[in-house]
Length: 289
Image 1 (cartoon, rainbow, N blue to C red):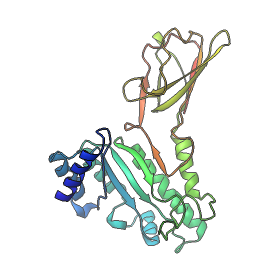
Image 2 (image 1 turned 90 degrees about the horizontal axis):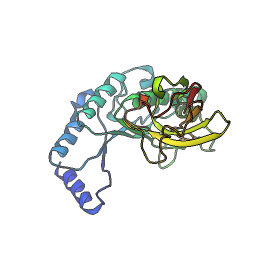
Image 3 (image 1 turned 180 degrees about the vertical axis):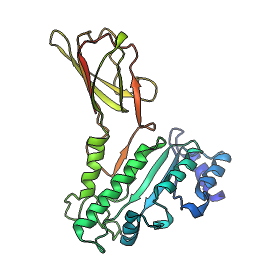
Image 4 (image 1 turned 45 degrees about the vertical axis):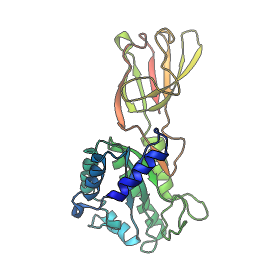
């Protein structure tokens, strides 16, 4: 405890005030009785500057991958991958009132135990299912994968998104589909009375484009946050800037392509209401992200 406390206090003295500090360790399953969250709580109680809780999720053998995928009890790297245990872990973190960074993820393709095609498909399925779980949890704001390429940096397991020849594995395509298809908003709505536009979609940076009754095109950018419409990167088009007959299309990529690190707003999926910022429109509003 004292060593960690002194390290954080030393960092506070030497880094600018705006630097965010992350404690990075692992919850060790039901038998741990919450030791890691309790440790963080004690540090916070002593006045330690901890802005983010890092959590590691490593599977360190092909055997463990197969066991986890089959639903058997397994604690790779002393961590439980069962959904109920992961949810219990996240609830403990939430009591600390800090955002969570799933900071280190390793999911190998168990090629030593299964045919390559089957092993790589299993890796992709495990990543897809667990990324969905983490992304759905409001306090999880970032997920970082450990190795992008198979068997590098001293890692003997084939846990990357790319094979050694840099060909893309099924796990690459699984993450790409999550980021570029599943976690994007595609819908069409019409403005109600007073110009109110409501849609359910992902937060993020939107590109707004419209065409008015005269055929003139316009474009603006906005970041849709938790409770307001103002954020760096652009401003919301106010009343009068969009004519009543305008058709409006918005797009907001969460990321341009699959990568080893992906992030989202802490609140995830939400209902966004634009209030009376827009005049009444007879044309539909198109949202895609």
